[in-house]
Length: 269
Image (cartoon, rainbow, N blue to C red; front, side, top):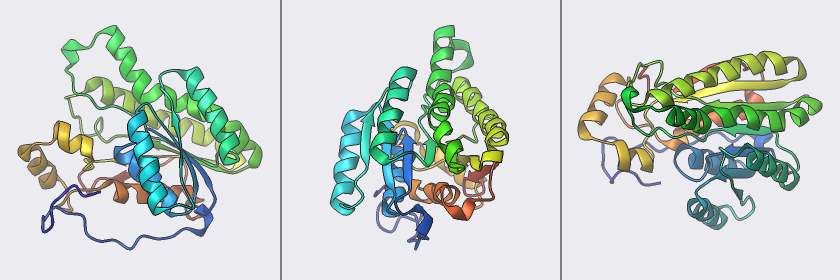
């Protein structure tokens, strides 16, 4: 994903990422996987040889990602499910189909979210409910749908994608930030509940990750300069880099990690 021009000092360096034998043929489901951080996670699991399904409301982008990965990874083509995650019955149905198609779901990555900007003054009750539904509610119900089989198998990894926004006290999307703070409540509560049965639950929190959405909708020279000033690593962070923490927690290598927050933000927070 070329987000910077050659020679750009902010470009991501070349990496030689780890391969995880335990992720080969492991069944993975990612919500919000058609673009941005989610697409980066899908792509990295596919590269590991995992059996991947992903959901999104963006049918065109989902189909495009499948087509692109089919060309580069023909043996591990992901399956796309067009689902409006606000519709919990549709989510349950999609996850049921995915468990059949993938032979179960051993890893769930709750990623889908929307960080649309708004002020506290303009939040209505309907918009409040929308922000909670888009950014938090489906996390719980996706877990509710897949956890029984994980618990029965005495293994599984649930990875919730959070946000550092509420910890940094960012004030340009209060409904999003407040909903995202609830992700940690889901993680810590259910990690304790599921732990005795060998199922792990963790949160991975991005800082500012240079996705197409961020660069086209929210980027400004002043904003990026402020971010890089705050970061210890003075460059952009990219989706493939963020995905590496998710891979670790999904693999057997992360087997002792649960109920934790992991920050991938270049040392900003």
